[in-house]
Image (tube, rainbow, N blue to C red; front, side, top):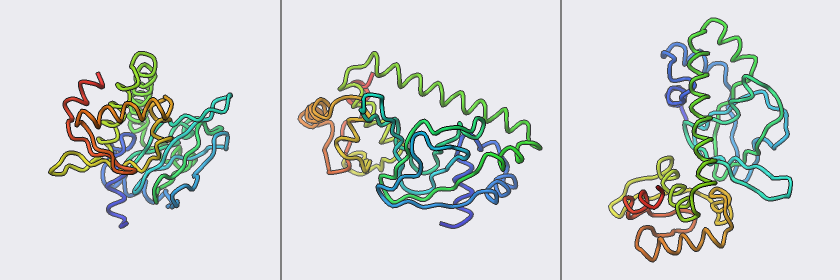
Length: 229
C-alpha cells in the first residue's frame, strides 16, 4: 500500500479528519507499520497499552473474556477504523484482546509521539475529545440493544452494521464478507450460537438473506432494517 493511500486512510479516521494534508503527512511520519496473519493476536487483554492502531487493510476483532470464562466479541473493525485509542490519553492495561480475522495491515502511533504532536495543535485535542465522546455514545447504544432488543433484532442489526463496514453492492443484494465463524458471529450478537443460527435460518427462509460460508448476502435490506428496530 502506498504512502498516499495510507495518508488518505488517516484522513477518514474521525480522530484525525480535522487535520490538513500537511499535518496528515507529518502524523504519518510518526507512525510505523505492522501486519498480522489471520488468527494472529495484536495484543491481549491486560497487556500494557501505550499506542493506537489504524487498520489500513483487513479485519480485526475485539474480544473480552468475562470472569466466568465466557467470550464476548465487542466489535469487528476494518480499513479506516482504529483501536486502542483510549490508551493515548490514559496508558494502562488493554481492556480487550485484538485478533486478526483476515490478513491485516495497520499503522501504529505511540502515546508520547501523539502528545508531542498535540502540543502545537490544541484545536486537534478538542476535536479528538469530541470524536471519543461520539464513540462512547455508540457504545452506550450497543449496551442498550443488549438489554432491550430480542436476539433476531440484534442479529439483523449486526448484519446491517457489518454491511456498512464491509458490504459490496451486487445485482443480487449486498455481499458482506465478514470472515467470522458462527461462534464469533454469535459472540458479536451476545447470544448463544444455537439462538443466533435459528434467527439466521428464519431470515433465510423469509428470503431476506443468503448464507455463504464466512459471508452473507443481504437481499431484503428494508425488512432487515424493520426487524432491527
